[in-house]
Structure formats: structure tokens, C-alpha cells
Length: 421
Image (cartoon, rainbow, N blue to C red; front, side, top):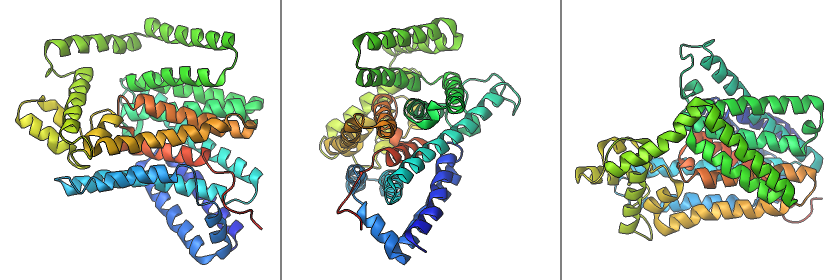
């Protein structure tokens, strides 16, 4: 088989992987394994394909993601529970692996135009999977499927409602990018499909009742508007419209109003009794506990697999309430890195976002096709950075896979090494 033949074999696997990402953990994992093995077989059996891959193997985020993963593995050395340490560190392997696979396979395509088309198609495959998930969610909510009619929060296919809403947030950024910067967004049919997806995704995000996603989307929208809108009057108008939209949702949608009001109720309960069970109060105690773990081992942390054990120790000392033992992370990706891997862990996490933003920012000044990828990469990184204050996103498979997949599509070196013959 020639290099182009291997491209024709592997590319459908990536399309199916993007499609399955929001729909099934098992299917996406199996498809990913098949593509890994097939890519390895191609590299071993076809010199032309191997040369094409080697030519573009240096990609912008590979080292940063690999370092983050390596720090997690190094943290197993000082952990008291090696089994849990490997369980956590093994999760993070998928970040550099998926990113490297997607970015290198796309960039090994010799035709620049073909690379752009394939990259956009991979984004559309991700949107198609999310659209199917959202359609199922609406049918469940309306009682046309299953027996959970009008039940809150909406969580189709058993996906946790916070994961569901934040995966949809990535879908919103993807659809907006395609709407603004691709040929599909310029056609009437394409615009209709993308706007339809956005309406469906917005409904799913609202019905999920996830304040983490709501906060992440609001902040990401404001930041992206500030970065991309040059005219001050237009920016001010966009901000005012966004504020009006959020205010309208707060005052006119009862369950949105209730979820936001619950924040003040949780804070009041927490101020009265720190150990009382509540969403916000529980997070605050977890954050305080994570900071105590960090303070005990500030450089290297308590160990990659010792977060749960540390919580159990605190519970035996009656420092934390019993209900927090149900959590294996502090609902904050920065504090999780600090607690388990110390300053080194936090630095490696921040380096991932630094490289993501540094790679995406210059591309915003390029042509239309470059803009779709730069805009999406930056929005994805910003959302993870903001919403990561409320949850440990890299501990969640669908979000971890989606981040690596989107970054692999969007952040690639236009040229690595010497020119191809």
C-alpha cells in the first residue's frame, strides 16, 4: 500500500472516532485502538507513509501534553497507593496520544487543500455525534423515549449532566467557528444546519442545569469577543447583548433562576455549617482540603494516586464531612494538580494551556481556513481554563478525549522539517 492508500484507510477511522466521541465511551475507545494499531502497521509496512509521518511528527502540543502525563507518572513514586496512581496517570496518556495521532495523520496528507477539507470534516463528524446525542436528549425530555419525561437534569445515555453540558459547549464553539469561517457556513444549507445544531445544543446545555458549563460559556464568549472583535462599539454591543441574554434566561426561565439562586443558599448554609451537604459548600471544603494537601507537600504533591486516601484520612480525623468521600477529585483541575503533583504538576498543566494559546493566537491573523481552527482552539482552551475552576476536566474521559481531538485537528505545524520531495 502507498502512503495515500494508508491515508484512505485511516481517515475514516478518525471520522468514526469523532462521531462516537459524544455517544459512547466504549465505542470511541475501541475505534481509537483500531486506528492506533492501523497507523502503526502503516508506519512499519510502508516506507513512504513512514517518511510522511516522520516529516511532520513534531507538533506544537506534543511535548506539553507528554510532560503533563510524565509528571503524573512521576508522582506515582511518592504515592502510597500505586494502583490508584497508575489508574489516574493512565487516563492522561490519552491526551498526548490522541493529539499526536490526529495532528500527525492530518498533517501527513501531502495536499494542503486536502488537509483543510479533512480537518473540517473531522469537526463536522464531532458535531454530528453531538447532534445525535442532543436529539436523543430532547426526545427523552419530551417523554417520547424512555420514562424520564421533563426530568432535570438532562443526561442522555447515562452521561453525567456536567460532562454532557460541557461537551456541548465544545460543540457550540465548533459550530460557531464553522459558521463564521468555513464554506459550509457561507451556504444557506450549511448555515441552516449549523444554526439548527446551535439551537439544539443550547437547549441541551440549559436542560442539563450545569452551572459549570453556564459559567464557562459566559466567560469564554466574553473573552473570545474581546479577542476577535476589533471595533469597540461592536464589542460593547456584543457584550450588552450577551448580558441581556443571560439576564433574560435568569428572569424568564424558572429552573435557571432556581439553579442560580441555589448558589446563595448553598453559601449561606456553608457559612452556618461547613459540613452541611451542598454543592457549593462541598466544593469549598474540597478546595480547602486540596490546599491542605498541597501545603503538606508543596513541590511534588502528595502523590498521583493519594487524593482519595488523603480524603479518607481527613474524614477519620473528622476534618471533612462523610459525603465528600464520594469524590475522587476536588472539582478544580488546578487544585487537583497542586494537591497530587505540587507546583510541578500545576506548572505542567499551565504549560499545556500556554502552548495552546500561543499556538492559536498567531493563526487568528491568517486566512479564513486558518481562522476556523485558531478560533476553535482558543475557545476550547479558554473554556477548559475557566470551567476547570469548577471541575477536573482532564479526569473525565469524554472531555479529555474531546480536548485532545479538537486540538489535534486545530493546532498543527504547517511545515515540519525539510520540504518534501
